[in-house]
Length: 452
View 1 (cartoon, helix red, strand yellow):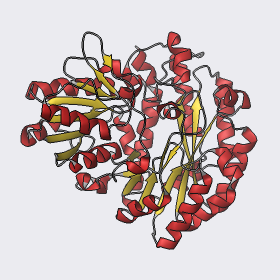
View 2 (cartoon, rainbow, N blue to C red; view 1 turned 30 degrees about the vertical axis):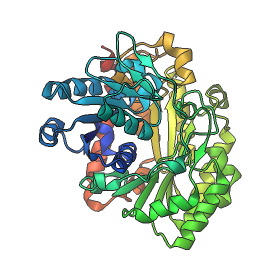
View 3 (cartoon, rainbow, N blue to C red; view 1 turned 60 degrees about the vertical axis):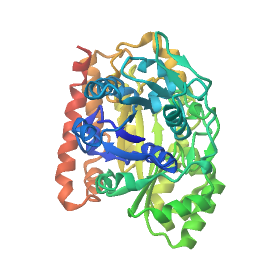
């Protein structure tokens, strides 16, 4: 069968100016389908806008769409437009939001919803389409109707049993994928899930609380097939299993692979295993994304973050001493006062991180935080779930809250630190990056308008 897998446009297009990763999930799906000899293409609508023209040209029998929460409305609109072009096209939706809240896609233009791992599910869906059988026997589906029917959940497979993602399907886009100054960049998944239980995160719940890993030898094989000089480890948390990552570092060193790496790591992992990060520095670790999140132990405890402020300082110093870049993430609680904003600003500056990433604490569907806060939600607009808008009531008047948020983004990074970070970019892109940063600040300052 002919299948088109579409990476939808970003609901928050401004974020595409700071990072854009390859659609790895779709490359996994494509690899699985090609094992069954299906004809597959990937269309990245973040980089090409006219997916309707592509549909008319390719004439697929099946279209697969993926969506985060803030893409919910956008993807449902896309499904309607696809059906308008050809009502016989079979539309399947998967991704994060489909997994945690499949019923939101219970509309006439969507034929099936995949909950959880989709490689095997999509292969089975196409088998049923070809044999004209029903879908009730397939695990992990949402079948639209007057009420959505959910088939039993699909256990997540052993990651080593999944095919290597087919990056040939995105060959024409690959030069455009990037993370900050790292361009071009490839993505690789070496694990899934997390051993921690943060209330605002759904990722550990998606694997039933398990931390799933791939064998280092298979990761090496995949790394050797990647042409890009930069690699993003898109794990939920890369270093949980430190012994595995220690072995992987040794294998990378022995293999002679020369790349720069960007990955996520927790504060406590860095503090407990500084030698591991020193070893990774030697093989190319260039930057680490760390979720510092708050400036008080009380809020860290409330979020079940399971770290302390003291550990934050130790982790930042370890990476700074190793000269590994630190991208620090911090969350603004909607209940913040002006004094809270000032204290968070001071705390961020004292940590001496290279890049500050500020977002608003957002109860995403599928999280413990969502279940405890859903009665308090002040908007049902999916586009508000972009971490730059609040979906919870604020203590400050909304306009003042967004004003303080924009001030935080401006003040949290000393000017010389920011200019030094911008210096990592290629000369032709530095001015554009500065201009994009100013646009983000303007969007934040005017964030209250979404609520009008």
